[in-house]
Amino acid sequence: MAADLIIGILEQGMIYGIMALGVYITYTILDFPDLSVDGTFPLGIAVCFVLVNKGVNPWLALIPALLAGALAGIFTGLLHVKLKIRDLLSGILTMTALYSINYTIVGKASDFLSMETNTIFSSAAKILPEAFTPYSKLIVILFIALAAKFALDWYMRTKSGFLLRSAGDNEGLVVTLGKDPGKSKIIGLAIANGLTSLAGAVYCQYGRAFNVGSGTGTVVMGLAAVIIGTTVFKKISFLRITTGVLAGMTIYKACISIALQIGLPSPDTNLMITILFIITLVANQLLTKNKKGKSGVRGDA
Image 1 (cartoon, rainbow, N blue to C red):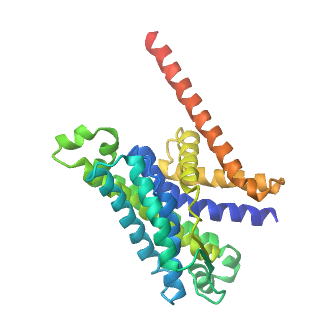
Image 2 (cartoon, one colour; image 1 turned 90 degrees about the vertical axis):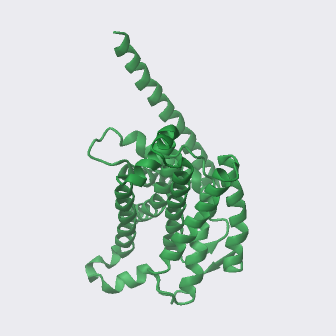
Image 3 (cartoon, helix red, strand yellow; image 1 turned 45 degrees about the horizontal axis):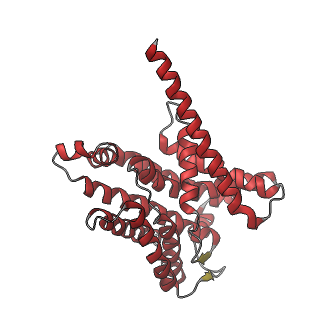
Protein backbone atom coordinates (compact mmCIF):
# COMPACT_ATOMS: atom_id res chain seq x y z
CA MET A 1 0.00 0.00 0.00
CA ALA A 2 2.77 2.43 0.96
CA ALA A 3 4.68 1.51 -2.19
CA ASP A 4 1.62 2.24 -4.36
CA LEU A 5 1.19 5.60 -2.64
CA ILE A 6 4.82 6.56 -3.25
CA ILE A 7 4.63 5.49 -6.90
CA GLY A 8 1.42 7.48 -7.33
CA ILE A 9 3.05 10.58 -5.80
CA LEU A 10 6.05 10.26 -8.12
CA GLU A 11 3.84 9.78 -11.17
CA GLN A 12 1.69 12.82 -10.50
CA GLY A 13 4.65 14.82 -9.26
CA MET A 14 6.49 14.31 -12.55
CA ILE A 15 3.40 15.00 -14.71
CA TYR A 16 2.66 18.27 -12.96
CA GLY A 17 6.41 18.88 -12.76
CA ILE A 18 6.46 19.30 -16.56
CA MET A 19 3.88 22.04 -16.10
CA ALA A 20 5.94 23.55 -13.27
CA LEU A 21 8.91 23.85 -15.65
CA GLY A 22 6.72 26.11 -17.77
CA VAL A 23 5.68 28.18 -14.75
CA TYR A 24 9.36 28.48 -13.82
CA ILE A 25 10.00 30.19 -17.17
CA THR A 26 7.22 32.75 -16.74
CA TYR A 27 7.39 33.31 -12.98
CA THR A 28 11.14 33.18 -12.30
CA ILE A 29 12.83 34.00 -15.61
CA LEU A 30 10.38 36.41 -17.26
CA ASP A 31 8.72 37.73 -14.07
CA PHE A 32 5.45 37.38 -15.97
CA PRO A 33 2.32 36.43 -13.95
CA ASP A 34 0.91 34.14 -16.65
CA LEU A 35 -2.52 32.81 -15.70
CA SER A 36 -3.07 31.33 -19.15
CA VAL A 37 -1.54 28.05 -17.90
CA ASP A 38 -4.87 27.37 -16.18
CA GLY A 39 -6.27 27.14 -19.70
CA THR A 40 -3.38 25.52 -21.56
CA PHE A 41 -3.23 22.53 -19.21
CA PRO A 42 -6.78 21.41 -20.12
CA LEU A 43 -6.05 22.47 -23.72
CA GLY A 44 -3.39 19.74 -23.85
CA ILE A 45 -5.89 17.31 -22.36
CA ALA A 46 -8.57 18.27 -24.90
CA VAL A 47 -6.33 18.02 -27.98
CA CYS A 48 -4.79 14.74 -26.88
CA PHE A 49 -8.18 13.31 -25.87
CA VAL A 50 -9.71 13.91 -29.29
CA LEU A 51 -6.69 12.65 -31.24
CA VAL A 52 -6.20 9.49 -29.19
CA ASN A 53 -9.94 8.83 -29.33
CA LYS A 54 -9.72 8.95 -33.14
CA GLY A 55 -6.96 6.36 -33.21
CA VAL A 56 -3.93 8.64 -33.61
CA ASN A 57 -0.72 7.16 -32.23
CA PRO A 58 -0.71 8.24 -28.55
CA TRP A 59 2.95 9.32 -28.72
CA LEU A 60 2.34 11.42 -31.82
CA ALA A 61 -0.72 12.97 -30.14
CA LEU A 62 1.61 14.64 -27.63
CA ILE A 63 3.11 16.84 -30.36
CA PRO A 64 -0.08 18.65 -31.50
CA ALA A 65 -0.98 19.14 -27.83
CA LEU A 66 2.39 20.78 -27.18
CA LEU A 67 2.06 22.97 -30.28
CA ALA A 68 -1.47 24.02 -29.31
CA GLY A 69 -0.18 25.20 -25.94
CA ALA A 70 2.67 27.05 -27.62
CA LEU A 71 0.19 28.86 -29.89
CA ALA A 72 -1.84 29.88 -26.84
CA GLY A 73 1.34 31.21 -25.25
CA ILE A 74 2.14 33.18 -28.40
CA PHE A 75 -1.37 34.66 -28.28
CA THR A 76 -0.79 35.79 -24.68
CA GLY A 77 2.55 37.27 -25.70
CA LEU A 78 1.04 39.16 -28.63
CA LEU A 79 -1.66 40.62 -26.41
CA HIS A 80 1.00 41.91 -24.04
CA VAL A 81 3.79 42.89 -26.43
CA LYS A 82 1.92 44.12 -29.50
CA LEU A 83 -1.38 45.33 -28.04
CA LYS A 84 0.25 46.64 -24.84
CA ILE A 85 -2.24 44.84 -22.58
CA ARG A 86 -0.90 44.30 -19.06
CA ASP A 87 0.74 40.92 -18.44
CA LEU A 88 -1.74 39.72 -15.82
CA LEU A 89 -4.76 40.71 -17.91
CA SER A 90 -3.26 39.11 -21.04
CA GLY A 91 -3.06 35.75 -19.26
CA ILE A 92 -6.59 36.10 -17.89
CA LEU A 93 -7.99 36.85 -21.36
CA THR A 94 -6.27 33.80 -22.85
CA MET A 95 -7.37 31.57 -19.97
CA THR A 96 -10.99 32.74 -20.35
CA ALA A 97 -10.99 32.19 -24.12
CA LEU A 98 -9.45 28.72 -23.74
CA TYR A 99 -12.29 27.57 -21.48
CA SER A 100 -14.69 27.89 -24.41
CA ILE A 101 -12.14 26.55 -26.91
CA ASN A 102 -11.44 23.44 -24.82
CA TYR A 103 -15.16 22.76 -24.48
CA THR A 104 -15.60 23.16 -28.25
CA ILE A 105 -12.70 20.80 -29.07
CA VAL A 106 -14.18 17.89 -27.11
CA GLY A 107 -17.83 18.86 -27.51
CA LYS A 108 -18.77 18.30 -23.88
CA ALA A 109 -17.65 19.39 -20.42
CA SER A 110 -16.25 15.98 -19.47
CA ASP A 111 -15.68 12.58 -21.03
CA PHE A 112 -13.66 9.38 -20.58
CA LEU A 113 -11.44 7.37 -22.88
CA SER A 114 -12.54 3.81 -23.49
CA MET A 115 -10.44 1.25 -21.62
CA GLU A 116 -9.64 -0.31 -25.01
CA THR A 117 -8.11 2.93 -26.27
CA ASN A 118 -4.34 2.68 -26.70
CA THR A 119 -2.23 5.12 -24.67
CA ILE A 120 1.48 5.79 -24.19
CA PHE A 121 1.28 3.73 -21.02
CA SER A 122 -0.43 0.68 -22.50
CA SER A 123 1.95 0.70 -25.46
CA ALA A 124 4.97 0.92 -23.14
CA ALA A 125 3.67 -1.92 -20.97
CA LYS A 126 3.70 -4.18 -24.03
CA ILE A 127 7.41 -3.67 -24.77
CA LEU A 128 8.85 -3.43 -21.25
CA PRO A 129 10.11 -6.58 -19.51
CA GLU A 130 7.48 -8.21 -17.30
CA ALA A 131 9.41 -7.28 -14.15
CA PHE A 132 8.99 -3.58 -15.00
CA THR A 133 5.27 -3.78 -15.83
CA PRO A 134 4.10 -2.50 -12.39
CA TYR A 135 6.31 0.57 -12.91
CA SER A 136 5.53 1.13 -16.60
CA LYS A 137 3.57 4.35 -15.98
CA LEU A 138 6.29 5.82 -13.80
CA ILE A 139 8.99 4.89 -16.32
CA VAL A 140 7.11 6.57 -19.19
CA ILE A 141 6.35 9.71 -17.16
CA LEU A 142 9.95 9.97 -15.95
CA PHE A 143 11.17 9.63 -19.53
CA ILE A 144 8.95 12.48 -20.74
CA ALA A 145 9.65 14.71 -17.72
CA LEU A 146 13.41 14.26 -17.97
CA ALA A 147 13.31 14.79 -21.74
CA ALA A 148 11.49 18.10 -21.15
CA LYS A 149 13.94 19.08 -18.41
CA PHE A 150 17.07 18.33 -20.44
CA ALA A 151 15.63 20.06 -23.51
CA LEU A 152 14.93 23.16 -21.41
CA ASP A 153 18.42 23.03 -19.87
CA TRP A 154 19.92 22.86 -23.35
CA TYR A 155 17.80 25.73 -24.63
CA MET A 156 18.80 27.97 -21.73
CA ARG A 157 22.44 27.58 -22.77
CA THR A 158 21.74 28.81 -26.31
CA LYS A 159 21.85 32.44 -27.48
CA SER A 160 18.06 32.55 -27.56
CA GLY A 161 17.97 31.23 -24.00
CA PHE A 162 20.39 33.92 -22.89
CA LEU A 163 18.18 36.58 -24.45
CA LEU A 164 15.17 35.05 -22.72
CA ARG A 165 16.85 35.32 -19.32
CA SER A 166 17.97 38.86 -20.10
CA ALA A 167 14.44 39.88 -21.14
CA GLY A 168 13.29 39.07 -17.63
CA ASP A 169 16.25 40.53 -15.74
CA ASN A 170 17.35 43.46 -17.89
CA GLU A 171 15.41 44.43 -21.01
CA GLY A 172 17.88 47.24 -21.64
CA LEU A 173 20.66 44.71 -22.19
CA VAL A 174 18.59 42.95 -24.86
CA VAL A 175 17.99 46.27 -26.62
CA THR A 176 21.71 47.08 -26.39
CA LEU A 177 22.44 43.79 -28.16
CA GLY A 178 20.17 44.89 -30.99
CA LYS A 179 17.43 42.37 -30.16
CA ASP A 180 13.75 42.77 -29.38
CA PRO A 181 12.91 41.87 -25.74
CA GLY A 182 9.26 41.53 -26.74
CA LYS A 183 10.13 38.71 -29.12
CA SER A 184 12.02 36.91 -26.35
CA LYS A 185 8.98 37.23 -24.08
CA ILE A 186 6.72 35.73 -26.73
CA ILE A 187 9.14 32.82 -27.23
CA GLY A 188 9.31 32.26 -23.46
CA LEU A 189 5.52 32.24 -23.16
CA ALA A 190 5.27 29.82 -26.09
CA ILE A 191 7.74 27.40 -24.46
CA ALA A 192 6.10 27.72 -21.04
CA ASN A 193 2.58 27.05 -22.27
CA GLY A 194 3.80 24.35 -24.62
CA LEU A 195 5.26 22.49 -21.63
CA THR A 196 2.05 23.04 -19.68
CA SER A 197 -0.04 21.67 -22.52
CA LEU A 198 2.32 18.70 -22.87
CA ALA A 199 1.77 17.96 -19.17
CA GLY A 200 -1.96 18.06 -19.82
CA ALA A 201 -1.62 15.61 -22.71
CA VAL A 202 0.31 13.17 -20.52
CA TYR A 203 -2.25 13.59 -17.75
CA CYS A 204 -5.05 12.91 -20.26
CA GLN A 205 -3.62 9.48 -21.04
CA TYR A 206 -2.75 8.87 -17.39
CA GLY A 207 -6.25 9.59 -16.08
CA ARG A 208 -8.01 8.61 -19.34
CA ALA A 209 -10.39 11.53 -18.92
CA PHE A 210 -11.16 15.10 -19.94
CA ASN A 211 -12.70 17.78 -17.76
CA VAL A 212 -13.04 21.35 -18.93
CA GLY A 213 -12.28 22.63 -15.42
CA SER A 214 -9.23 20.46 -14.82
CA GLY A 215 -6.87 23.43 -15.12
CA THR A 216 -8.26 25.26 -12.10
CA GLY A 217 -5.45 25.97 -9.66
CA THR A 218 -2.73 24.81 -12.03
CA VAL A 219 -0.76 28.04 -11.78
CA VAL A 220 -0.89 27.91 -7.96
CA MET A 221 0.52 24.38 -7.97
CA GLY A 222 3.22 25.41 -10.41
CA LEU A 223 4.22 28.46 -8.37
CA ALA A 224 4.34 26.42 -5.17
CA ALA A 225 6.57 23.82 -6.84
CA VAL A 226 8.90 26.50 -8.21
CA ILE A 227 9.21 28.21 -4.84
CA ILE A 228 9.75 24.92 -2.99
CA GLY A 229 12.27 23.74 -5.57
CA THR A 230 14.25 26.97 -5.75
CA THR A 231 14.22 27.44 -1.96
CA VAL A 232 14.98 23.92 -0.76
CA PHE A 233 17.38 22.78 -3.46
CA LYS A 234 19.17 25.97 -4.53
CA LYS A 235 22.05 25.34 -2.11
CA ILE A 236 22.82 21.99 -3.72
CA SER A 237 25.31 23.22 -6.31
CA PHE A 238 25.33 20.12 -8.52
CA LEU A 239 21.54 20.23 -9.07
CA ARG A 240 20.09 22.44 -11.77
CA ILE A 241 17.10 24.59 -10.92
CA THR A 242 14.95 22.56 -13.30
CA THR A 243 15.70 19.45 -11.24
CA GLY A 244 14.69 21.34 -8.12
CA VAL A 245 11.40 22.35 -9.75
CA LEU A 246 10.54 18.72 -10.55
CA ALA A 247 11.47 17.72 -7.00
CA GLY A 248 9.47 20.65 -5.63
CA MET A 249 6.32 19.46 -7.38
CA THR A 250 6.87 15.94 -6.04
CA ILE A 251 7.15 17.33 -2.50
CA TYR A 252 4.02 19.39 -3.08
CA LYS A 253 2.07 16.35 -4.30
CA ALA A 254 3.37 14.32 -1.35
CA CYS A 255 1.99 16.92 1.09
CA ILE A 256 -1.42 16.79 -0.58
CA SER A 257 -1.45 12.97 -0.61
CA ILE A 258 -0.47 12.76 3.06
CA ALA A 259 -3.24 15.22 3.96
CA LEU A 260 -5.79 13.05 2.16
CA GLN A 261 -4.40 9.89 3.76
CA ILE A 262 -4.83 11.27 7.28
CA GLY A 263 -8.48 12.00 6.62
CA LEU A 264 -8.76 15.44 5.01
CA PRO A 265 -11.97 15.41 2.90
CA SER A 266 -11.39 15.69 -0.85
CA PRO A 267 -13.53 18.85 -1.16
CA ASP A 268 -11.06 20.56 1.20
CA THR A 269 -8.11 19.89 -1.12
CA ASN A 270 -8.23 23.39 -2.61
CA LEU A 271 -8.11 24.83 0.90
CA MET A 272 -5.10 22.65 1.63
CA ILE A 273 -3.45 23.84 -1.58
CA THR A 274 -4.02 27.48 -0.62
CA ILE A 275 -2.65 27.01 2.90
CA LEU A 276 0.38 25.13 1.62
CA PHE A 277 1.06 27.84 -0.95
CA ILE A 278 0.80 30.60 1.67
CA ILE A 279 3.20 28.74 3.97
CA THR A 280 5.62 28.28 1.07
CA LEU A 281 5.49 31.97 0.16
CA VAL A 282 5.98 33.14 3.76
CA ALA A 283 8.85 30.71 4.31
CA ASN A 284 10.51 31.87 1.10
CA GLN A 285 10.18 35.53 2.13
CA LEU A 286 11.61 34.84 5.59
CA LEU A 287 14.57 32.97 4.14
CA THR A 288 15.22 35.78 1.65
CA LYS A 289 15.09 38.45 4.35
CA ASN A 290 17.37 36.39 6.60
CA LYS A 291 19.90 35.97 3.79
CA LYS A 292 19.84 39.70 2.98
CA GLY A 293 20.21 40.54 6.68
CA LYS A 294 23.31 38.38 7.01
CA SER A 295 24.78 39.87 3.84
CA GLY A 296 24.21 43.35 5.24
CA VAL A 297 25.95 42.50 8.51
CA ARG A 298 29.00 41.16 6.68
CA GLY A 299 29.10 44.26 4.48
CA ASP A 300 29.04 46.66 7.46
CA ALA A 301 31.74 44.75 9.21
